[in-house]
Length: 475
Ligand code: SIN
Image (cartoon, rainbow, N blue to C red; front, side):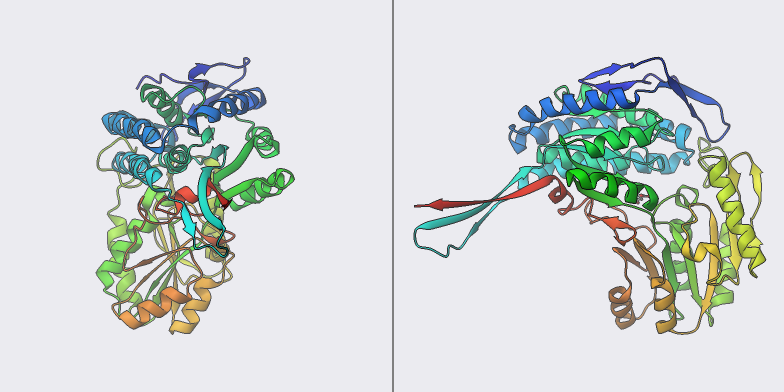
């Protein structure tokens, strides 16, 4: 595939800054896909200036006019579905069917907020004085920045820019340097969709820490929405304190799935596989710990193993691939370390456990997992599925909540009373009940504890980009 765009997109144009560049690799074969101009600090400053100017006119448009630009962009994304999906697979390794799913998922945020932007209603407050009238209006927060990860090179951008643009904010997107090519392709689509220059700027560079610092320290940038690790989320939070910037942080997870003794086992196996192995285990909502009641443990494990063995590992461009490569060598190393740690503490590998070549790691199931193993507390972000046995509800809910994270949790039970009670007790922002795939543009995505704060998607997602203003009229 010919890669067309390899520079930052500022003021409606692709622009190079300086002579530095960095390589973007295909994780499936480590071939260089493109050399991308490294815009660094200079480009970040230019983008802030450009977004500041663009905000003035973009924020004054009616919600209906802004919605039309978003509708154009939605159509263009869908028209270019196959090319975008191929680019996603090339730079992040995801199986092509999942990449097509990501394009549809990504477009769905644009469509949703094109509509939702028209409904950011204010309120009239019943007055406390005969001669006063009280009203609340909502206004865009200003210039915002979207800092996005490599595991969803398209959808994590659209989930942030769609509500921001619909609310009337201008946006600076800083995509991951591992996967900037999809982002730059999207930049070109925003230009085709007719967005005025500067309303969306895309900055690409490898020195993300300096670029991030400039965004955090800028008084012009009023908000940052970040998806990525808890470690980086904490740095951004600290750096943003000097400007009291608004933040939305969608950080790491450590999702439990609980399979109760009254679960439909086939449903539980399928739900666990679809959550655990999505994007080769590299999503924040992937199952990280599998708790299975001792009565059904062996039956669940044998059904799970049978299906995991059928997962086909390969280059994501092949249609029948279900497990693509991991993003890079350090991701592989982390998974090997977690695997070795668990074996040294009594874990038994029933299937998988090996590197096939380069960045390909076999889907792996480990039984006899226990709380001393590192992956009890740590996000695996890879295709390892550890199984813990439990005996009663109280014990398993305590174990499930025994983590700093609180993004997604799942459980399987056919008992409605147990379902309600468990859902209420789990300390997580999102709960899948008899379901392993819960992400959608219509529902609030986000977590609690070290998984961050703020919600994306749904009717709540646009609130992050709006200021509430109270008007008091004296008569
Ligand atoms: C993520 O991994 O951060 C996002 C996953 C999703 O939207 O389902």
